[in-house]
Amino acid sequence: MADAVKQALDAVHASLDNNNAGIDAAIAALKLAVEGAGQKIVTMDKTRLPNNSRPGRKMLQTYFKKRGVLVEFAE
Image (tube, rainbow, N blue to C red; front, side, top):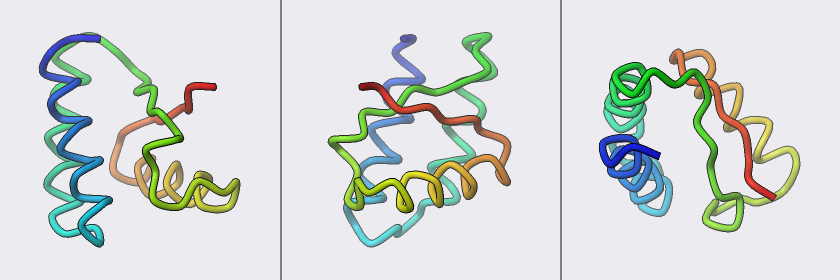
């Protein structure tokens, strides 16, 4: 994973941990980093999610997809 993508993903996790403060800006930065790295999908560590239930993960995927970022979860 490129450093820019990793940093943007860390910013997303920090936002999620902080009651979603600044989440849209973090997702926009992640989208730019992913496109810059030539990737199409971001792999997130589901253990770092504040709501690691299946419905929570699906809601997160939908929210990110609406903003142009495809998310999958590492096992």
